[in-house]
Amino acid sequence: MANPFRIFRHVDFGRTFTALRHRNYRLWFIGQTISLFGTWMQAAALGYLVFDLTRSPAYLGYVGFAAGVPAWFFMIYGGVVADRMPRRTLLIMTQTAMMILAFTLAALTFLRLVQAWHIIVLAFGFGIANAFDAPARHAFVMEMVSPEDLTNAIALNASMFHLGIALGPAVSGITYAFFGPGWCFAINGISFIAIIIALFLMQLVEHDRPAVTRSPKSDLKEGFRYAFRHPVIRTVILLIAVSGLFGSAFLTIIPAWAVKILHGNAATNGWLQSARGVGALMSALLIASLGRFQFKGKLLTAGTFGLPLFLIAFAFTRWLPLSLLLLVGVGGALVIVMNLANALVQIHVEERLRGRVMGIYAFAFFGFIPLGALWSGALAQWLGETVSVAAGAVVTLGFAAAAWIFAPTLRRLA
Image (tube, rainbow, N blue to C red):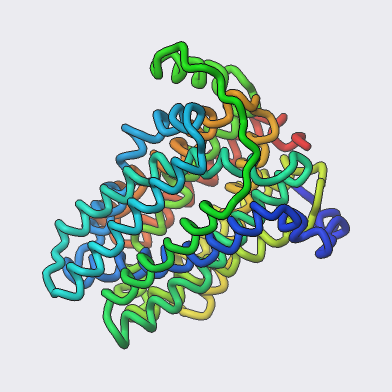
């Protein structure tokens, strides 16, 4: 695993925001930061509202499953679409769709009509939009920055994503407690306007896309063949799938954990979600400040071990301050895994296949999250939240050990 002292010798905070020298990326960064704040306000409020309506951790799993299952049907095809049409246009369409869904959820809540099944249907709608959004969003980074700033831009993407996690749930918990969940959903709807305007304002270099001469099925087959014959991309995609299925499964039951394990309320749920975001933000900024470092594989390996170890400790902690501190560690380790996995795939993939491979990469994570939500919620209902969190952590730790033994090339990647 990476020597932490070696890591900090490479830190240069003057390089942390180098990708912002690109005008298009600055617009993206500002718009996405605002939008993600609203997204995580909604995510935290939605989970607590579901638990408030049903008092069932299993139902939290159903909602997570509904939000993620569209990835199985649409996300890989979304990668084909991202290679066939302008990615900015596709992103404007998906962001607009999610804005409309957020306002619909807000209206149902303000009118006191919202029911648990409404939330499942709307979660499914968000999942469909995300299935087309995620591949385009990942591939779009290369259109906004130069190749040498790619890793920094990916790290900054993670930093704004987790800044939203750090701030959004905490504000959501307070807003929910004092004003109700409807305002959390309405603020999210408004926040989408920022990224839509930013996308319209970008001045992009038009790329000649190859003429469409083959069927989508043929394009899909080519993308799969390429991804699973490439040793680095194949290993990283398997790692991301395990992280989605087991390493992130605990997120589903955080609202139940706040109430049943820590005896808290909506504000407690917000603090737990935000603690993970703080750790993730710290790791993202650290990676951004490392510049063009040459030990990505070692740092990635460290993250694969750190994530389950922090989760095991969290599973058996009952004191809120220590729980928050451990979730900071969980968030930090998770973003190391996700950020460096993304960077390594983007570095090794051919440009003509970028959308399709990033569609497979996004599916490996988002496609397995709903299954993780389903088993985690069901196990929490059956044997308790502690067993559910610990089980996911143990499986994730086992995979990290297997990767260390059977895929030693992973930790040698630069």
